Image 1: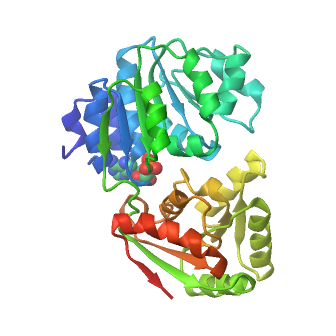
Image 2 (image 1 turned 135 degrees about the vertical axis):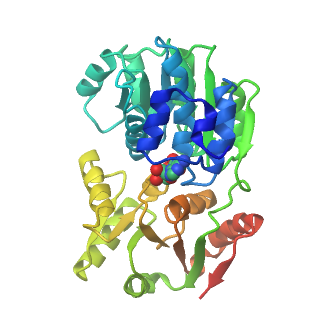
Image 3 (image 1 turned 180 degrees about the horizontal axis):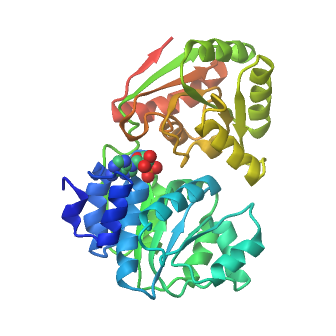
Length: 368
Ligand code: AMP
């Protein structure tokens, strides 16, 4: 498939894709969309930043346009990912204002969400915890859901959402299409998918867990006491926007404060900040007000900021797979990017685990 027009999508959707300047499908879209359009269940595995959002949104919208009484549900692990998906849905339904999407995520007013839910939305994008709250209070019904998407399914399990997912499952009709998307497919996904999916087609783009090839990866050996100096050196050496990952909320605050004291333009994002603060941080980083964003793993997935040139792992991630997600924040949609990780003697075991994952994908990492 060379062009979206070959898919015979509803005309309004094709027009919206043109307005978005999406002409050629990305590899995951090329593989997943034709399968999803046949109403089969699907497990899609692709690298971060490869166009997964449109890969599930296009078939969902196409189906809902044909069935005016049916609805779609998209479950996501983080608020940021939810907001981003809503933006894409809004663009894809530019010529179908009747297909309204709403966002049910934590950290936002329940009241406004109840009002939005009462106005018969056709697509709900939700984080599991908040959706369960709404379901228990009877604010939302899922009985007309015909297409269910679980995005970043592996992260949802990592974040301990399995009980909420099982609860949500009870409210969903059995006759529906289910699409699972994830950048990595750990074994517990198989268990969950057996519960959710019927005879799914698997589509994989690139090797499982393979990081984007265009990212130049390197490690710098340093000491805990020297990390801040090393970070300053690296920031001075590099041009363009830089995302710095730290392990905890307090470490994120500390690193951001340290850099601010040196006169750098820094913002920070972690789960301890309010939704307003998080939105402002991402917006400021996106529009270049801040060149540097310090973040916990909350930013490792889902945030799509095309111009991130560098990812710096000030601290290594706890879960090896998160390394792939973190570095996937750069080199998005075909751009080039660099990822550098600081390794102290205490990190050796953790780095060995990450290296094993990288070896399998054939990625090369330069050691300094
Ligand atoms: P995603 O993996 O969904 O976050 O998408 C990553 C980036 O690729 C986003 O900036 C999208 O706007 C862009 N993108 C997705 N699909 C296409 C396409 N078919 N043509 C051009 N850009 C795309």
